[in-house]
Image 1 (cartoon, rainbow, N blue to C red):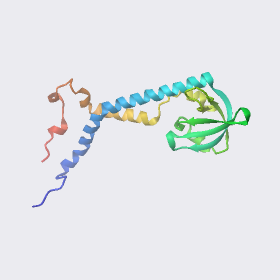
Image 2: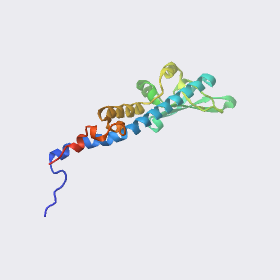
Image 3: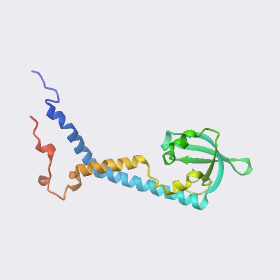
Amino acid sequence: MRVKRWPRSLSELALLPDVLLWFLAALAPLMFLFSLIAGFDQAAQHRGLLADLAAHGRVVSAEINQIDFESQRGRITLFYPAENEQRELAVIRILEFYPADWLNRLEKGQTLELLCVPPGPYRHAYEAVPLQYYPAFQRHPGITRDIWAVFLFFLLVAIYRPHFLFLGFVPVTDMSVTLLSENPS
């Protein structure tokens, strides 16, 4: 006796995208909500940094110590001279907010003019923004591309397969359920 392996026919194989869309449609409300919360959180943190920069920020000339494009959406670590011949730390975070050509020209040891929040009891202490990009940084919503992508992807899934959004509001028999109505031979 020979056991037939899956798929038995091409029509069963053609159901895979539909099954995947049903799975994504089930996740759509949750992921849509997740992306909204993450987007609002990023925007609130961005506004908090702008408020700290406006209230406590100071312009300094800092030297680049390390450029890291990988960790935590990228960051540039800088040091600037402070009182008593000490050096203070400044960090430029989330590098995707800045032009790629400018980032590619940066080198270790290069000096940048920054607007930074000094160390202290501030929420965004040590964070900095390049002075030349501060006006553009103020206009930016502060939401990263990955959150926009998740939001738009699951919005499109919800538009294409809205069935799970209406569970409980519309009887299941009234929904056009294509996966269950197709009978593979």
